[in-house]
Image (cartoon, rainbow, N blue to C red; front, top):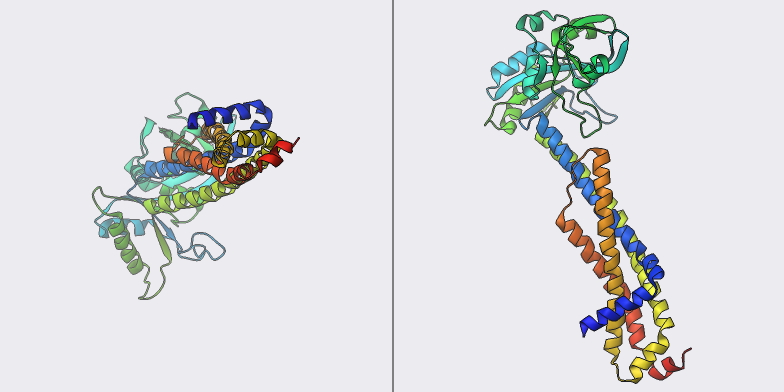
Length: 403
């Protein structure tokens, strides 16, 4: 019986194919938007996690100043660190594997007739260890180069391509505005970060050379700390905070004038923000499903009016009211499910294209697809019920008189 009802419903829908397609367009758009938004959001969260893990899950970042964002940021007035602070942290915190300053400045790099605006970072070999960044050409800084602050540099892949193409730049000279330095190595390519910045667009100098020749001071405004394998980052963070409070003479009850950020917490925070934004966008997109449901209800009411005579005949020859109601309800559900299937295909297609363009993982979740499909079926039940009930309650005699 149900199979026959479904067959009649499909035939009625096919009889007005264009009208049926326009009717379910709202459901198609709603389902596609929800699936695309959620899938892209999950891909963005996965990319954030991958980016943070590529830096190292045992990584801590230390900055002077407690507030890092907003109008009341205190890092502008907090006393910066210096290299002696890093040495003391390594001595007094057993959980620290290595630590390095990471000072940076935007500068123009020049080689021959080629010019490229890039980020110059003053750091040590420990920075490469902390961030697990390998070299593909050349070598690291020698101990004498780090201590003496010699004018030698290591290039990121983007800078290498801009200035030297695919050739080996080791041994060549580049100019960082007025500073001339020798290229001694090339870093492994890491690609774009979650925020769209190019991590390979970098020139790395020994930190003492950066301070002396570029910054003109001995300030350190960012420290990368790698925690030993097996050690707890939470414990290491607490020990670092205790040592820094002592070093900076912060009294009991006084607020820290520094910030220690665990990269795992940073990843959790960014993922949480992404999830909230994804949920809001999906909720907005789901509104179009309701609009699509209203469209289905409207066209089913029109269908009941157009087929009043047919309904009257069925009731007159013995059809029960519940059978008439079932026919129109099934028709509404079939319409909605057709829209759901088309919406799923469109949504996954849009998400795949967006993932390709945004360079994020394509991570469709079965529960999202099944949820969207189930919700489209629910839309058909809810918005098809009233027209179906109206059809079932028609008076057979009045219906037969209808022209």
